[in-house]
Length: 261
Image 1 (cartoon, rainbow, N blue to C red):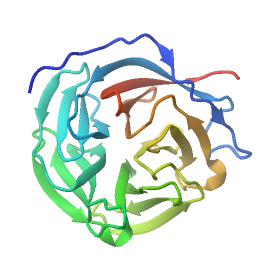
Image 2 (tube, rainbow, N blue to C red):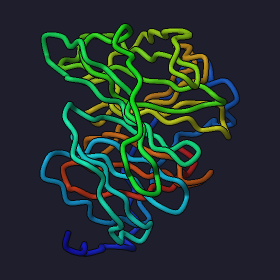
Image 3 (cartoon, rainbow, N blue to C red):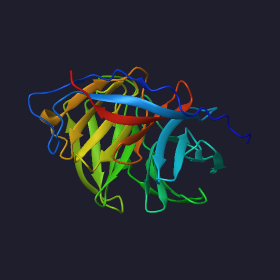
Image 4 (cartoon, rainbow, N blue to C red):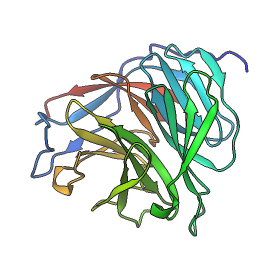
């Protein structure tokens, strides 16, 4: 694969993500002012079949296209590609040397095949999969990890379904299904746990995103709007998120910043 042209150190530009504060603040949140996103750098992730998921181990970025996983250094240098597999791959998350991908057949009228694929993060070799089909109807979307548990969200082909996040143990045995009184455009495409605030950040396939507490309680939800259509995200550290810009085929480094209204 040809080396990538790295477009680092983009001019710092706000995404203009104004957040509407609900009557009740998120559990564990210290925030009173609106959140703002600030792009600090980016690099190109050219794709021939649609950028889907993103994850990081703190040293590398893993980018999931619809059927293939790629690994980059954080300066944008391409490292390697994994095997090209069948079915639609969505969100991914890195946990303890492995990359976990939400995978479905993703049919608008309903799907029966829903799995979590597991890859070795060093080699990108496919290891195994877990069947989670009993708990999804259309498409497994975002995936996140918190305190020994995996959380897999559902994506849809419309804007009419309530958001759903399914909690599993480390062996992907079902624990609980959370239904959130919110309808993300095309359901949940990206999901990430933020330990500093005990919140999850939720991305749709549109510009809408929100944060919600770890119990997925509706009155803790804070919504926001980005300037481009979102996909997956990954937490690099306490100050920085990696966010897919699918249309531009870039990975954005986003600094979280609190600003006065």
